[in-house]
Image: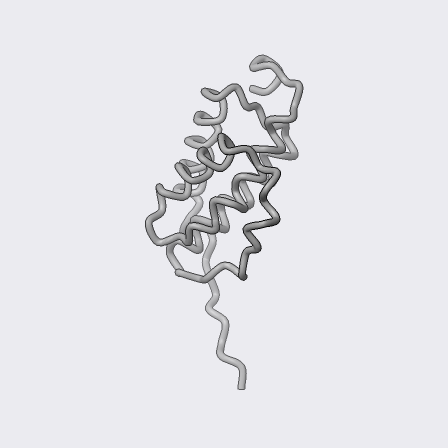
Length: 115
């Protein structure tokens, strides 16, 4: 028999997700990283899932660390800093988050376009 799935009211986390998203965007801007609108949308979605996992303690699927060899140390460090805001999240979460930062680094945007 399957165990019942817990229904999560995502609206309960909206304020925390928005606050986290704004904090991350500020961190990225300080590092001269400007995600475009699609990248911001994907980042928001990931941060929302992270915030919810930080409360539900839902585990991540197994992460193959070797797959992240191409991620720069600076992107991974930024992701670690964000994940460390949530003491209940698994360390592997930083690898997944670092992909968003690495991709956004590739943008040829300036602050005026990336704002």
